[in-house]
Length: 348
Image 1 (cartoon, rainbow, N blue to C red):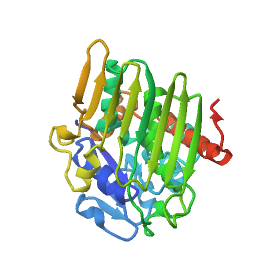
Image 2: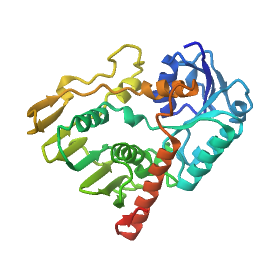
Image 3: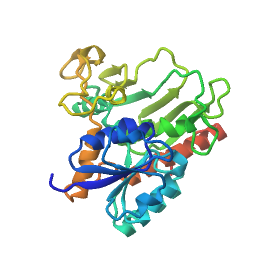
Image 4: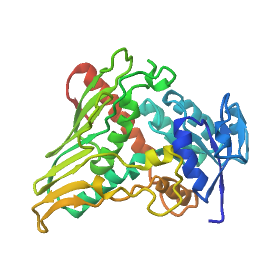
């Protein structure tokens, strides 16, 4: 890796501290040169040689910055990404790419005109449980699939007044936050559905944003159920996948976020491997019968930046195309419409 790309982080909140910062710190193809922090200097511990700036313009006007990571509140994604592309920067934007599909289309067109790379940090594509589901489906253990149910549940029966995610504002609520992950995973596996139905609710006392969703995606012969609630004290399976010849059930969530939050950097091979006790359960009566624990594929968030580096080098296409994340927000828009109308919405 001879070429290093200079990176600027547009914020250093949770996603900067837990995801982008540690991954970029370790990756040999990127160097974090600037971090935008309006009032604090939290990034100095992780990036002691990076310059902390107080305005976004300090990043946009720096000709040495190659890549901007727009990891700000969702309502700011469109404008800040547009400004970075206009300034000639490549851009990684946090999910959701924008709050409206038409805004995503505008950014996609602008990136083409500027001949810059635009991609979206859909890191849950590299969760170990999701990679394991992909592997099981590819190997055909379950036969013809009839149903998949995917949950991203939490227990937080209080509101965090300091967090923009719990404030009543455009683009807040779990449908945008966690829904962006589950919808993206469904699209990766099965593509666009024919129709959907969604039930969005407010379940926590005093909450002003949706903190529960139940989205049903309709495919020929297949139903995909995506669910989230902030009032699940005892979680059920993360994945339940059923087919004509078997089922796969997986409890627990990929350990990468927990380890990154604890300050563990992804330096050693196998750092993200899941303990055997947390492996999912597979039963199949296909050509090779199986009944027992099925080894989880190790997750690998670093793969996002590995693929991006190779794309910048002209060696491979983007791993997360912005058009795919545009389709995520399109389905979220349709889910909101379905909830308001209390009806199934056809997808043209």
